[in-house]
Length: 94
Length: 218
Image (spheres, rainbow over the protein chains, first blue to last red):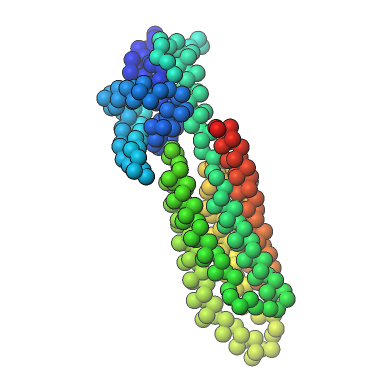
């Protein structure tokens, strides 16, 4: 029986962002951009979608007078990610 | 990274790649362990030489360890500002080493109080009994310090899966046991060796790894 994959996570960039954030406590926007190799605009849109789904928490602050965006996975995001990986496993040949 | 329909295999590959990229980020700069490894090694060796050749420097060499707190604070702030990502264990590690700093202060404080009270009694006993091999408190003081040195080192080595550092920490504990049976002069040699194995050498290796990783990321 195949489980349905979460449409929020079943997207290349959003999944990459969640996979990065699952292993760390928090990460700056520039770090995520650098590691995913995405454009700032696209990443911003995808992070907003993850935020709206309640999967990530976004904090904006200032560092040396420059705006700084920090992203952190939420407990809801961790549950969704774990469920997504479990669902993925059901698609793989045993 | 473009948006496209993902296959299950591609999804797994992305997850694997990203987790691995995040993992590679956690390489310690090695500056802290090098700084403390060098300072404690130098202080211990100078202390050993002072006892061995019976001379005294105009200033207490251990003031160097107190002074090293200044660059350590600067390094911590600088590394914190440069860090774009924070791992789950970073706060825990910071608390472990903060407790180590406080622990060293407390052990030194208690050692000094104990030495101040016990050494005159032991010295008096030595005079009255005519025995020349009566130890003073400092023969044991280094054991307590070596135990405190080992504690956070083993925790850090085990958490970061850095075997050499874990071994260095265990060496501190072994030295703590040996130092309980040796004279103060030899204790300081063990302290120098412990600081070298627990911090200086692992610090140099960490620094090399960090620079290598930095070059790869450029």
